[in-house]
Image 1: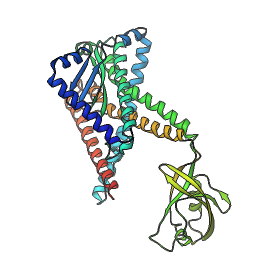
Image 2: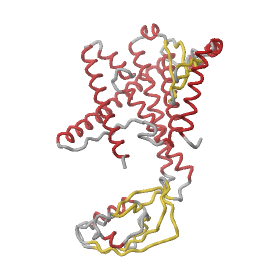
Image 3: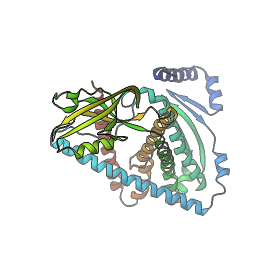
Image 4: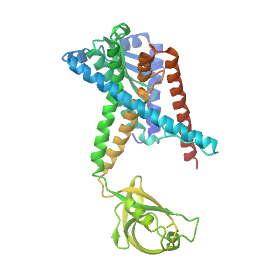
Length: 392
């Protein structure tokens, strides 16, 4: 579907229509419920049963498998929590310094809001990736619960507004009656699943990156200072940098390194470029090649804005797949990090409760409360940064 707005409107209209039909028609509602379909306001869930197939598939698991899953789950969560707190402490310190010096605070945490922080053009694939990530998360909970001997009453999939969802409903009595190690293993399993998928996506990204050729591009000139060498030479922009003083330039870092070495010297640069057209992430070459002679005084800037873009020689499938894999990686890593965080509504919060409640209820509340406040604060700052940067 070309227009994401049509996709969103159609999905919401279908959900609203089903909700009205269910409210008005008792027989229709009973028929849906008979097949495990439950319709709420802007939500639809489909119950897939009690995971009997998963129970048969996991019946061969032994004690060694349980130990590996437990160690992997807890180790993965410990790493993610340590990484999260490193980011939180560094970010909050930067925010404090910015506020105390009258600067603008920034945050690495930016909430994914279609049409606000991300373009609507990425919405359809993004929703698919979120759905897969959530399904993997819940599936891992179900599999490990069955391996640990905890009964799973039901599991299913669905959608809330435009966001896909999945769920697992383990028997509360069975879960509470399991050993502490089993409960920790089940709770950490979803986080482990998303981490493994993120690692897989990162591997694919690494392999695809080898097929993606990039070129250094002069995006624009610093026209605020007419005396700068690039402005005086009136370099055509955008242009791909081909050579400097007869030496080929294939990477942006090569060009920046050369300028850095000559920063304190008076120099003459013979710059060869090829004009291009920027299409998204690509620099599409034209047939026009230019040669410029730049006289750069010692200590002077060249006066160019640079970027590294994907060459037009790179296959389209490689570029598209790389972009999608990047989003897939971000979605799974974000879901793993958020669920590992000691928050009141996450798996990490339940694990923290399991660990700290025996030591101190106040300590448990303090840890989760402070973490929640920190993340919410950084998310708000990140959202404001995003809104400010998008303002013309």
